[in-house]
Amino acid sequence: PSFPALPSKSAYTAGWWPSPPYTLALTEGEGWYPSIKVLSTLRIEVGSGTRRLRIDTLEVTGSGKIEIVGSGKLELYVTNLKIENSGRINDLGDTSRVHMYYNGSTDVNLGGDTRYYGSVYIKDATLTIGNSGGIQGNIITGGSHVLINGDASANVKALYAPKADVTMGGSGKIKGALVANSFFIDGGAWVQYVPITQPIPDLPETGPSNPNFQKGRWK
Image (cartoon, rainbow, N blue to C red; front, side, top):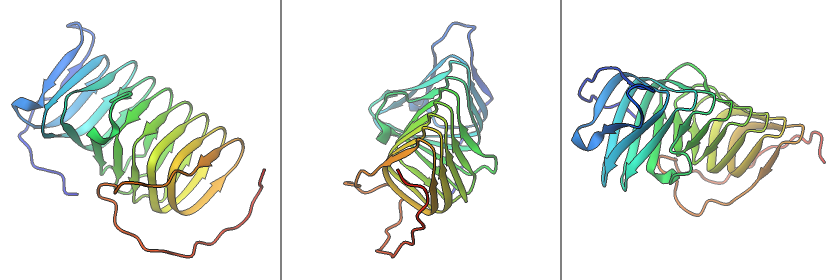
C-alpha cells in the first residue's frame, strides 16, 4: 500500500537512561519518525482503534522489545529495518494486532534470537530468517528470495511468495501454508502444512493451478 503522510516527529530512542520502560502514546496522535531505536522496552499505546506509525529506520537490537498496549491494532510502515540479537516485537502477543509494511530495498534479516509476532508485507526485498530467529504471523512478499536456515522458524497461516525462490536448510521450520515460485529444502529442515481457515488480509485471491515438482533428496 501507499505509505501514509503523517505528522512529522523527532527521532526517538528507548534506551537505558532514563530507566525503561518507555511509552509512545499513539492514542494522542500518530506520527512519522525519521528513526526509532529500541534498546530496552518500548510500550506503544494503541487504545481500542487502529493506529499507524511510519518509521524511516526502525532498530530493535540487544535485548530491546516493543510491547503493544491496548486492545487495538498497530500498523507499521517501515523503510529500513534492523532486528538483531534478542530483539522482540510483540513477543507472544496476538499476531492479528500487528501489521508491518516494508518498502525498503535492504534485505529483511531476522537472525540471532529475534522474535516477531505479527504479519509482515515486503514489497520486493529478500527475506532471511536465520539462527534461532522466528516469526509468527503471515508473510507476504513480492521479493525474489526467501531463505530460512539454522534453527529458524516461521509459524505462519501463510507464507505467500509467488515470485520467490524459497530455500530451507539446517533445522529451519515452516508451519502453515506455502506459496512460492520454487521451493528447495535440504538438511533437517521441514514443512508442516496447516490449511488456511480464515482470509488473510491484503492477500489476493488465487485460483487453482498445476504446480510442477522436481524430486530431489527425500527422507
